[in-house]
Image (tube, rainbow, N blue to C red):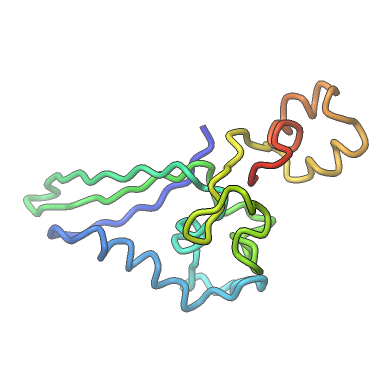
Length: 153
């Protein structure tokens, strides 16, 4: 499956709002359309994963265990389709008029018509342009480009 993941660990139970707030706090270092600094101490991966436009299936869970006698709480969320594509990580969503790409499938200013398929190659638009969708490579690895004409991908 092609799912992304965010994780958070604490030594005491906290609310999901707090956990998501930690991930969202990385937004202060994110600038849409610009590459984040290469400073190893600065990361926006957790933030970009939670706002990734094409992630539409989300599942979260918490698990607890003891480590050397101390409690540990692990908070994990999976996002499908995964975000943080290295080539488009600086643009996890499109800017502009809400629902411009989906005028008939809009709720709360968000598109509600996701593509259930996934492109395994980042250049599927180009490959489909030259090879078409019936080619063995594009048929197998560019399903979103070939099968989702009106859905958000």
